[in-house]
Image (cartoon, rainbow, N blue to C red; front, top):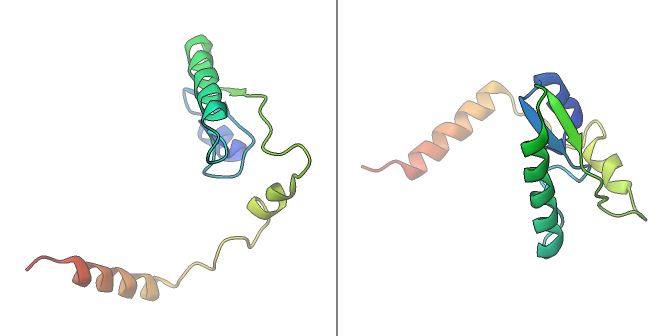
Length: 103
């Protein structure tokens, strides 16, 4: 299951199901177990019927029909924090390893 159609199209998985929901929420909003079950059930049914490699089935669910602003936030350049320099990332990883290293 994916909510990143462009990425999924570029990697051409054997089969995929696309749900146009915010990234990381492919099975729906929190605290909506009935919707989540329906999405997973429909995805499993789609996986059973896909016979052509790289097929992506789009499920018809909508995150919020009256508010699509999440698309602007999730897919707008600059929404993610700046990537740290290699040196800063190496220093952060060394600090993390020191913190959790067993002696």
